[in-house]
Image (cartoon, rainbow, N blue to C red; front, top):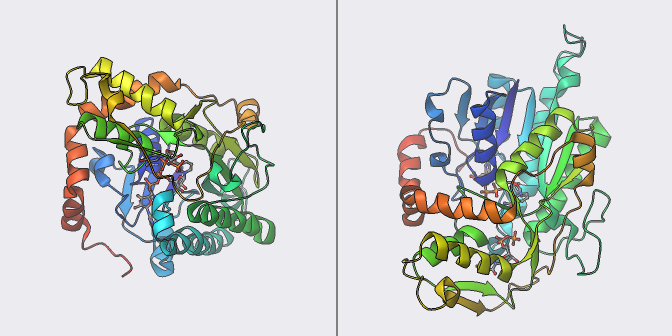
Length: 368
Ligand code: NAD
Ligand code: TYD
């Protein structure tokens, strides 16, 4: 099976590709524009892997996408490419609409044309290439908006009420994907997942930002009172869930994915400080009350959602998926990973990974 993964140089896409290639479960064509969030250094060793191909292509570029589909003829698309950071969407929403909404529409158009041209005669498996094709849209629980503290967790039938420009753009893309299924019959599956954490996450998101600041003895900026709740899932558990849905999910169906690990941001930051105190007792933030002394309460994010939580019973019961990591063990492992990979961290923080990208990928086609 050959899968066209968009956004495969990002945090979740790279975890998915590392997992699928490690198990030789699928050939991969990674379509990524390499924005600030895309880092081929998160895919170590794959350059020499014959089952892996990289295409530096922007999903808004219809001609380039058509060429990629023609050249590689994928059996499925897993669409992760997106602008993904809420704070950036507040500062500059335009690119979120461009990539997440318009980019998804262009990708849907090109995928639909390709799918309509596939052979509809059954082969030895009893199914045609057309019947086997899937378009898997990877989305977020943020489309459901702010969950009251006493409300049951989000599930597949929760109404959409996005708060941030990021969430609104992802909500729009989810609607487009469902419309392409209903109107054109494109065989789609959709997943809405809670907050991910794990190795190779860009240090603008809560957990890697706090780990790296704490290791450097810098302040840990907690927005507002730190009482906001997120439901944390290890990125490798997310990747396994995505594979299960791609393989066995109901066509046109939606699956909510979460870690059953609701924590306030302050609990997360304190747990991280305490784990660091055990792993790095002599670090620059390790004295006095340990790393907790670095915590600072700062101005809240505008429109900040108070709570997200996912009820993932559907995927658990129907597809047999379950998270393998507890939050506490996964957090310790993640901290250890950042401690053990100073070079990756240093190249991301200094911007050196961008120079490498331009040197290695400048000749590849890219819009603008
Ligand atoms: P990320 O920001 O780490 O990676 C995004 C990737 O998309 C990067 O490699 C970037 O270069 C690429 N990209 C951006 N714009 C592009 C464009 N126009 N054309 C081609 N490639 C482009 O994001 P992530 O955290 O890995 O999230 C991946 C997906 O999962 C997103 O769709 C996000 O909405 C969704 N999601 C994320 C989380 C989370 O906690 N991070 C949770 C649920 C769902
Ligand atoms: P983030 O990792 O940006 O993910 P999202 O906004 O998509 O949930 O933020 C997670 C939570 O942490 C969110 O409630 C905002 C909060 N936060 C801070 O308190 N301080 C920070 O420096 C960051 C980046 C986030």
